[in-house]
Image (cartoon, rainbow, N blue to C red; front, side):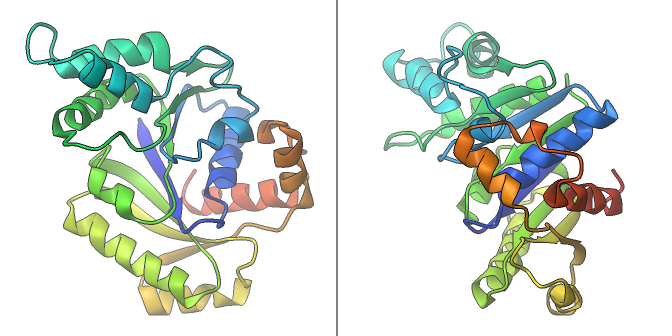
Length: 253
């Protein structure tokens, strides 16, 4: 089982990258796949043509509130992690033909959520063991790193745009990931469609991280989002999809 994480500033194409990565694994027969949408915008389901709520599924945020807040104390009886795991299986896991999907939902309400957060990490750790690939779409920014939903990943793909802020974001994200003791094998940089290809060498010289290439501009990606069509249906000759295949190939996939 391998865990991949897509991260970056808002608007860099993290969700599109995850959706097209999923298409790549599906077409290679690299199954089963678990997708985790930890972005409060919850846009990964839309990118994959999934009506998560319409399918009768609940976000992890909703399940946490029901279990630990409305349901009262959880230290008696079934351990918190087992309680969350069973609820995720029953109510929070969308099971599709080619992939399964879990949606984190918005940040929980005020208060200390150390216990439910720990229960969630343990439950997800057990769930992930059933899959060949776990691909996580993270929120914009770097605050999510402190939550450490998973403390061990294989490859992080940080999407960058051509701005000083984006370079600074990557440097901070890399530093924080190490500081909070997230173990990873590789920390890769991927250029968004606005990123000039010739800046790749500057990424590596300034940040000391491997640049895998850029995602090509593709008007079909925007059209698919607007129409609600799944990016899994995007044509094989799609420039964006071809570039993602090349990027994943350079990462050894």
